[in-house]
Length: 208
Image (tube, rainbow, N blue to C red):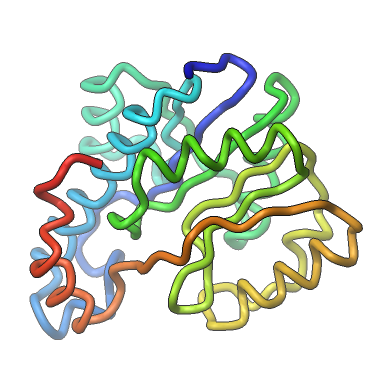
């Protein structure tokens, strides 16, 4: 299904102790939380590559971190630095750049091991007939957004990292008059209780 008209981007932070998975630090410590984050980033990247939908890029912050550079080199993909600003501004800029040279772009976060390669492939198929595809998360956010067009209005004024993100994004899509489709609802690894679910479902040991 490889499609050079589609770009798949994984957004990720560098696995720096105390700066990632901070809500898990009290349960497992900063070092273990950073190691888990690193595994989640690689899982997301492998999922994107396994989907086989087109070229894959890793957009990172900071991009020059040793782990991220080695990860990109090992998988043979391009590593880029994320733009400045809040997550909405950074996503908008990634889409602005990606859609200049591709008809479609799918952006994935790195906190959702439940997201499978089949989900990415379905997003790309749906994008051929609509403007946007989004995967809702149980916590009110979304771990995947695919666009065939871009607008700052989609990302402006959203209460990022809250349960309102998905609702506000639907409102903005409707206000723009865009056609969009939604994938199945998935879950992120953010809270201590998510660790139990992660272990029980063995997602990091299964193929994406």
